[in-house]
Image (cartoon, rainbow, N blue to C red; front, side, top):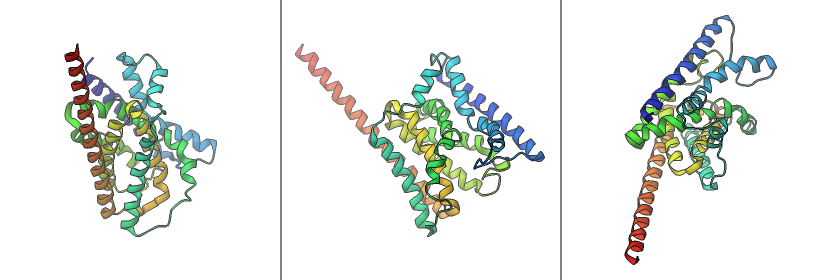
Length: 280
């Protein structure tokens, strides 16, 4: 099956799962259903499970579509790709620096340095944000954006994936208990951020080799864990434009440098092979 058909299958299945589950949660909201950002009881944990299925819809669709089309042998192979952790330390630093720059720009622009939550909550929330956020990239960056990149290139694939990602997020603004549903997140600022982050994920994917999916999972997980700490300081238009423009610029520069280096390596190998042939 062609990559195009696989992408279509993945996108359709992702949205079917996401919209079916989220639509049900929105309806149940009229009867008291609520998502809990911080879980303090088994009941709250149980109430978050359907929400987790919505958020995990890209990962679920990724596995089903890849298995159906014989792109993977089994769940173990899928997990090995998604959780390939043996990556160069420079890749982890690239992710951390990107996140630090994003939030630093917001801090400078807003003029605020106080944190909404203690910094240690970042580490406490990492496991939860792996499932409620990070593992989205097991779909977006395993199938969708790389497939679009092959056809449309880095810039357009980032924009197209960003738009699809935004549409997938729309139900969040109607589910009770989410920051989006409670009005804490401006939709249009959020839209700018999503598209900018697709550029950064695209850059991570380009430079990360076998760990390309996992490094995107790491970035998404860390961002979701860090965001509540900085509170509303990221909710200014000046900061939104400045921080996300910087992310897009860094991403494009990274990809340009990587592509030039890759072409140079190919040329060097070609010349070396040509020299070997002449000696023979």
